[in-house]
Image (tube, rainbow, N blue to C red; front, side):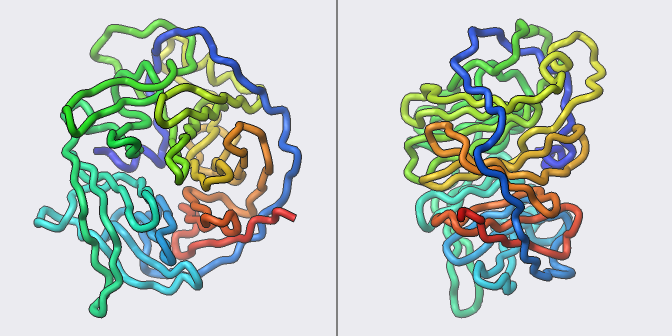
Length: 343
């Protein structure tokens, strides 16, 4: 697993199956645009390379690279440091590597991806400190070893992307049967798939599952596309395109191995039962400057556009849609919180 490629957004040659485009909505602008006032919390000397940030109950979990512990835990109320979980190493309760994605399932379970396995766990507050209780572990087949942004729906695991052929939006795996399958619509690039096994295919996107497990939404890094799926059937319900003048699609489908001039679009996507939130850039690829959040409802209707006072690398939203918490690669000694200005 090569976790840091999530932050550099290196894109190799992309050649993927052609298909008839599903119905889409082109978004010219959001009906409301506001600037998000950000509150800062000092966490000096605790984080090296902060990545994914996830709200779990009354805590905030931060994935951290290049330290002895992968997860740093803080209180949601005031970001007091509560402890660290999952030591780096080869011991029985250690991990060699953890992908920078943490998901909450229900009210008390998190999902994370170690080297070759995905685990469900609970974080317990004990008198002697925090404890991680692993509830289930799913060993990934060899074909999914480098897949990532893995999520769990209807007793199956799905990967948003990986460093190999993907003709559809997701690679699925049934732990019960051992069956691998592709799931969802064809990827929105109009070029026949190459049969060459020597080419590297990376098409980065990120996915969020609605807390009630009825729908999921996926957002592309190098295409201005958000898709909303029925989580049970895999039917594509909505497809939204941000209107822009970039030439990403042309660049990605030409025959040149040099992919200059690409624009970054989406890097993280989170959700509540009411809304979808996607972290957006609109700046040249290679720069981790994601300083907007786009908000839709689950019917694909644009609701709110948030301008951020500083770029984030990851964020999460409280279940009541009141607060956003976030991390940054530019200020690694701080974590951030902001109240969403709905009024």
